[in-house]
Length: 231
Ligand SMILES: O=C(O)COP(=O)(O)O
Ligand SMILES: [Mg+2]
Image (cartoon, rainbow, N blue to C red; front, side, top):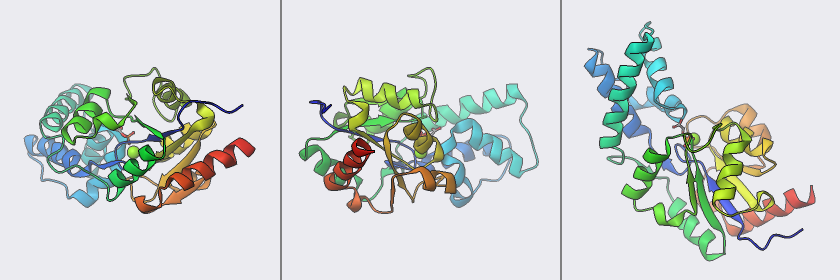
């Protein structure tokens, strides 16, 4: 049955819509410096940037042969998030051509939404600071829902909040969590290959892969929706 609702394009945030790694790395280095450690280079931190502050801290201390005890981890997380919130868009920027792609999708009648494992408050602050918030019908963070990605409920809730229909939605992400969640929700997915964690499993499950947002056209999204409807 055809839905009369606007078709929806759901974006993951970190590593997909916005390159947040520089500001996340700065927050991590703030914590490392506080504990008397040398800073990590951006290229070392980048692969971990899509997994949240706890995973970034865990990996950074592991690289030094250290494990943070839980009370120290909680203190470090607070320090990390305080720094990150104060510098959320010092260097974070939308990926090349994504704003133009969103303009084109909106002009073609698509609604847009964000489904991120970032906290909703941080996601909104980032989008507000970059002047992007008004483009999205819904912004659904990890703490907005009971189960975050890769649970399909996170995308389903995003689609519901954006007043979309699951059969008329496409997910765009950079990690297996995005692609697995979309797959389990029965939603077509597009993997961007420039994000933080594209892996073989995500590649195999995604309906297609793009390396440039100039390829994210209304035509491509319509084709994916038609394939899903036929399948
Ligand atoms: O902050 C995270 O854990 C990852 O965020 P993302 O889902 O927008 O990639
Ligand atoms: Mg991501």
